[in-house]
Image (cartoon, rainbow, N blue to C red; front, side, top):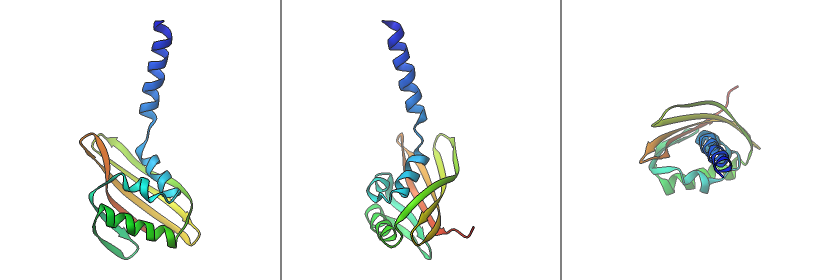
Length: 128
């Protein structure tokens, strides 16, 4: 009885450590899932999309992202850089392929009471 329980416990632990928030957020960008991305927002988000930059409430930032995805429907995304070594800070950079061009998206997550939240998103044209 102890062996199956031990195996189950070890598998559960492995799954919980395998979760990577950088990849999860990248997948949400790839799918253009503003609702899922918005669930990670802090109360205010520093948002920079092309030449528009400001600090917005989480609901305003969601609307602006929704407008971006309406103009640039995503086709695919690839994580090109991530910082996950700090227990209170995560940072990811992805390339987002859309029907209207390629973009470089960077996002910053901070630990807030045990949950990581997005405090900053930068979307710029990918010049590579």
